[in-house]
Image: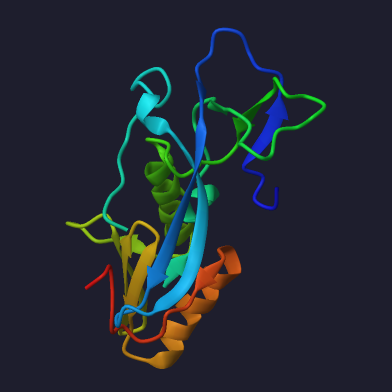
Length: 188
């Protein structure tokens, strides 16, 4: 509800309703120790058909954004079933009309990338000419480099202050997990 991902609506006639599934994961650090347990509700998007349920499925390679995909706005009308254990007893036959992208949808990563890219461009970043997941910002002679991989972000600047400005900017817009200096990234 906090992110306004969906609204409960009567089930429309002649639409495919995508079912949901709970996914549980243990996030590990570089030594294999447990950082945290995660639960994520995902859409079974493998049932979607291009041109009917979504326009395109594209995510260029992308500090860790919590529930990143839930920030992405959908271009299409997508309906999902009520999740097991959370069925509205007054409206058990209703479905949810998604307002935001949900993990598991084919277009989720594209919706998230579009949201993040628009935000960074509005903050005077520009995209690298070769890599659309590289964002650059100038401050005098200093450069801030930001590399995106889905919901993982690495960034570097010649001064701590410039890096800190970026971290604060991202935290003002998205819920972030600050990972500190890079010693472990994407499982490597």
